[in-house]
Image (tube, rainbow over all chains, first blue to last red; front, side, top):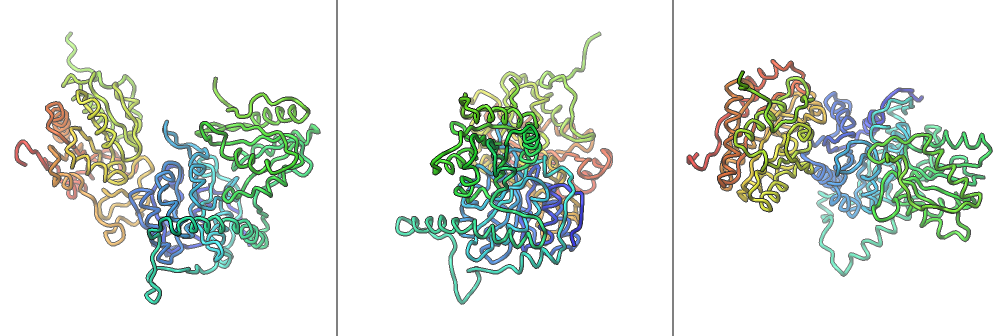
Length: 392
Length: 248
């Protein structure tokens, strides 16, 4: 029986972690993640979980501690944001290269400089190529649900990869929403007992993690990482199916919103997708066939499925809350790669919005959809990549 | 009438927005007074940390460079070496200097860099809301040690000044406090000494300042000063830990 609550995104994810009750967690504060793991420290102090906490001195040490604990055979979590994720960069590659299923909520925040504590996607996009699974969440409910599912995905015996669950800093982490919690026993049963794979300290089968491998086998090792990523989509869908039976909430590789017959579409991640759906509805009311695609699984990116979902549109705008300076936004580059394989492709433009927590307003979505409507009706594209919501 | 007391020129004419009873405002004032008195305002560059004093550039009336968390000693090293005629100081809390940046401060001291470091020890991570820091004393309740810090699970408090005093490259290390008028005066003398040491090319100096954090400690400003006296100073005694010139 689901319990209806009014909680913040951070509180919801801390609750998911409590229900999973991992063996070890790394705790190090960084805004806006801080109060998630602080709540978890209270759970430990109050005897609600039996997790071993390591209060480390930096994120680099936090991820290092997680790598050790995971290699030793524990179910391991930590959480971070922004420059904290950036400081983990070296260790992120080691976690995925060692195939350690560490689960890490990432409360998305801008990177320095200038220093900014508010939400954008620069942090997780910077970790795009680290070999981690990335699952993105529109709101607190999705962050809670995705966190629970991430354990099943990362720990799946065919996968064994670390996974980060992303939600927007402050906009979601600190906003109170209505959501539904599963029962403790349901979550416990859903994630199941943690199963080891090649743990350290097995004296009958001694082994090494992350040894020196040079030109002889390194290339093959990385191909193996590539190949395991190709299996993730199937596992994500399988876990989502089971989760739907448990919760009634449906998840896929991405969410298609009024996309079936759409002429124009936005592709947009996380909380801003929620804002945009209202505007899509308003355009539909005006007889304009607008739709929206909200990616959920960003790594590995579901290229074929995204292409199939957008193939009948005439004009698409990919909205990025991060920039690859000197290039397009990171989400745009993925969607562009996906659409290139189609014989007939929609026109494609890229808008950069909401950096450093700049508000994304319905009027922004409206401007973009109007521009797309003009392009779909034969108008020409004036600029492929553009910042919107800029103070001039 | 003759004007005998004024705001230091090294402070902007804006009110401090730190929490009531916080030590940062006072420490900013002491640093600004020393800089004015030494006549070095035109030559000073400060390094701001990550932590509450990230806002120090809103108050200091000279150039400030914001550094990544824990990296001010490395940034100060580079500034001083590129501009040896300038006076370079870093201003760091215990989260910045004694946690994420511990390696930076040790190696800056070991290299004997001719910089001045002001280290604010308030025994917790203030900016993020009072989590345990390496400087948190045993039994102290923080948001990540709600039952009090335990040596068995969280280890022991880190005494940075004593640690750095063992390093040959360090020239002057003193721990001061803000809990009495006398201590505040001693703090100012130590800050001035750290600047003068740099001006005379004596090498690495650090002043550790025990500073109240009423908001995160959950005490009144007055009770916070009392807690420094009765609890913190037992773990962190004030005094000169190293003075190479005097053979200490």
